[in-house]
Image 1 (tube, rainbow, N blue to C red):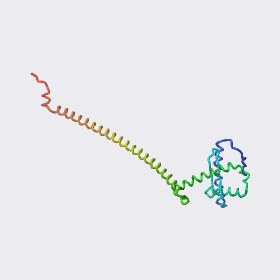
Image 2: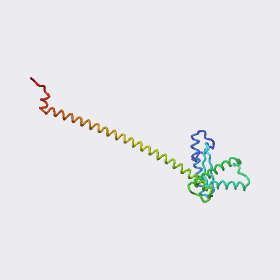
Image 3: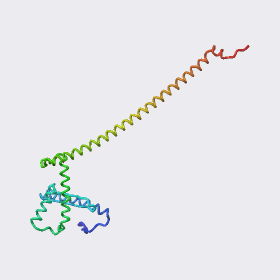
Length: 205
């Protein structure tokens, strides 16, 4: 039997709709990657979920290259494809992708990559951002060190208190043992000394 054809309509059950979206999105990503590799094609895929979460794939990795090629093609042909007549939506997607690319480039610059295209002012800005990040990391590290030191001091204090308590308890037990031994020795001496016993007895006339 062949596979049953699934009617393309909105899935009413929210849970099933989310599961289907995740599976189909993964499939689209995989097919886009395979298409770009097998056919040496420029591919740009942009997906917005129902909640507005963005997923995208581009080959080459710079989405701006694909978007630029698209705009150049539209400009040269003089018209938009029928499915993309809404320029506002296209501009919104392009703006979002531009922000993504700018953020990705900024991250690479902060990692010390792709600095050759930056001028003195740009390099100074990157340096300031790195310095701010280092200050935050150093501040966080100092707070952690202080917290660990405070905990170590508390543990040492508790250990000292416990040691004192154990020492006092040992001294108390030792004192009680010595006292008991002295009382025992005194009692034994009185029982075995006849002179002491005779002195302790009353005189009889």
